[in-house]
Length: 198
Image 1 (spheres, one colour):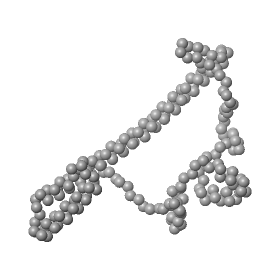
Image 2 (cartoon, rainbow, N blue to C red):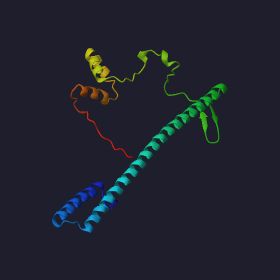
Image 3 (tube, one colour):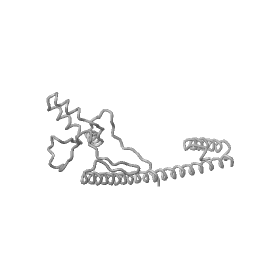
Image 4 (cartoon, one colour):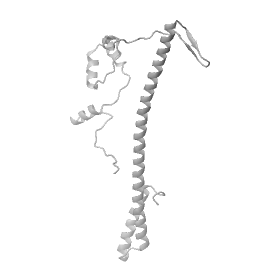
């Protein structure tokens, strides 16, 4: 019965059965055993349904945690593999340079010294690179950002605004505004609920 009906359907049927039980009790002073038995079946079905949902959520939560752990594990493995690739390539490049070779050949592969299509930058000490030669990734509160743009000439303000790559609502700023009874368009602060499986 719990498999054939949703939690909503079971709840609706229980409400209907309760109404029928009350009507029978008012009319005849008693309730038929068949009706009581059906009521008991749906009570059991509700209990079974709740347990099935709890088992499902517990299983999915465990699977989610496992997948996240695996993702972290594979990211570490990918970084390790990348480091090994770079190390091996560096060793082969050193070997070719030391011997004055342009290439070495095997039965399946040829390892060749080849110039890049464009120049690359090698950072020897990142801490010494001046600020004007860096890209900055900032987390700036919206109010400060507005104030900075307002103080700049229009051309610089537009140039700075064009540097934004991504932005998202700040929950902290919205909560702060709500604590001062300020309305924030497109957002509202409320105390939510969550489902706890125990």
